[in-house]
Length: 206
Image (tube, rainbow, N blue to C red; front, side):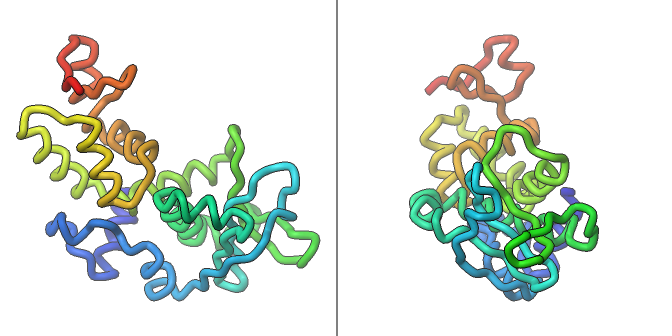
């Protein structure tokens, strides 16, 4: 997934060696101009009335639909909105050609993917989440950024919140990505340089 998403960024003209140029990743531009997908806002609560539907993609129409009923939430949580855009792009790149993964919308008779808020996710949703994390927070960019921050001797929560703003992601997505890359480990709100150091109680205080 790392190689795939990095190649997408390179093909779009993003220089991963120039870290500052990667803040934030222009995910909407990549969707609309690189993949020529349409982004639209519609009320799609009917896709799953008993759950919160965030967004959907209709591969046959090359269209990503963001849920109009969640627009106020997205405007307050820009990082979550960007992650949702990237998640839906992940479905396009990874799953759109596999019709067995699609759901049939009985209202429109169209085959769709739709992203909903639920605790249990099928594998394709985890794959789309991983795609989103990798493309919005590219591995080489994260490594260079965190290593540069570590050179100052400590990393504090205000540093991570500032990085979150630059990347335009949520703090939970940033935390997950940093731990996935083994760049930081956070336990009981204490920031450690690694899980191993947390076991030895070597920490960055905040």
